[in-house]
Each structure stands twice: as structure tokens, then as C-alpha cells.
Length: 130
Image 1 (cartoon, one colour):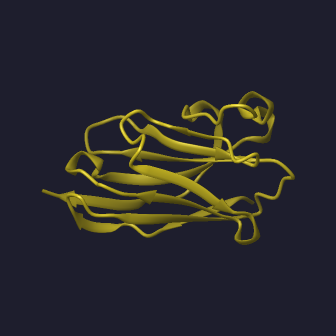
Image 2 (image 1 turned 90 degrees about the vertical axis):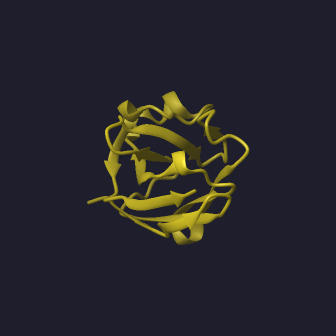
């Protein structure tokens, strides 16, 4: 059973940085794709960044240039480095993994749509104060 465990959330002042980690277990495919989503109170969950085995990445416009997604295959871990944080980045951040049946669809461009993600972590809270 696939499990995703996030860590690294916390509270930081505006302009600060945080690095989120997502360790995956039982998500063992020769090719794969994972992403980070966030949900602020009263808002819908939105895709933030995604990556695939080819190291192709995709970012939401709101975080482009500030956030960087990366991976360590040996550790089965995906990271989200968040710099220049703003109060509007405050949200619960979720790690997610794409269902195998969608691998071909996201091979060139990792997806920021929830529709292709089958596995989700429990989330880690990020709070940015002004």
C-alpha cells in the first residue's frame, strides 16, 4: 500500500524559507510522477509543483521563481524548497503521487491537476506571518 509522509512544515515570517519533504513507500515504479498541492482555509486545493522521473517540472504561476521541487530517488523522497514566502502561501501542503494509468499523460509535463493523483499524504501545515 502506497504511503506518503510529509514533513518540514512550520511557521515562518514573510520572506523566509522552508523545505518540505515527502517520503514515499511502496510507490516503486521504474517511472513515476509526484506533486505538491496546498489548501488554504475556505479555498479549494490547488496544485503547486510537480515532477516526474525525467526531472521535468511544472509550477503554478503563483510560486514560479520562488519554489523548487526536487527529488532524491535513492531516498524515495520529493522535496519542495519554498523561498520568499508570503502570507498568502499559508496553507496545508499535501504530497501526492500519480496513478500509474496516467503516467503516459504526464510524461512530458507533470500535472498540477488532482485528477491524475491517486495517492495522498496527510499534509503538513505552513504558516507565513507578515
